[in-house]
Length: 197
Image 1 (cartoon, one colour):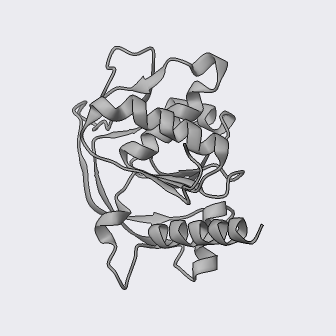
Image 2 (cartoon, helix red, strand yellow; image 1 turned 90 degrees about the vertical axis):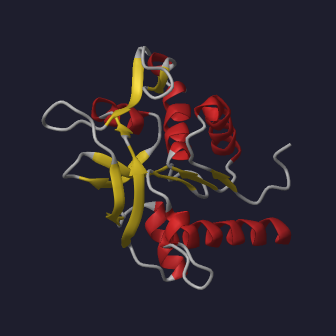
């Protein structure tokens, strides 16, 4: 079924009924190493899929879909007064220079930092950051002020990157968002290798 796909975008959105399908797709994309870009909910699905591969994290879920879950990988953004908040607008994202994404960005000549459009009320639960690393994913961009993980990747794959933001909203035909540029560059490189073999 997946043969013939040069790349996959796991989209965001508010349709939480498709979350399990996104998680399953994220798992398959990672196993067969097809270039994959996860956007917002797509990134969350990538993280849950990876976590569920750990024997002690098989119950990983999202608070938004399973508030009573045992292992809530993504939880509401807290405020100091105990209420929750929504992270909206443009926030600066800076990629870890040692990451695979940084190498892809260099391949396109794109910047290592940019303003990313955010629209979310949930974040990767900080108590599971080390478990995410154990699952093989790396945190490659993080907003230290709010302790929000902005970008993750699996550096062992050709391109497997998730963004909590929405790079599609700041992309234009002649000026794509650097993350979109890196994804398309990776897809092109992978396609060229496949065609020549």
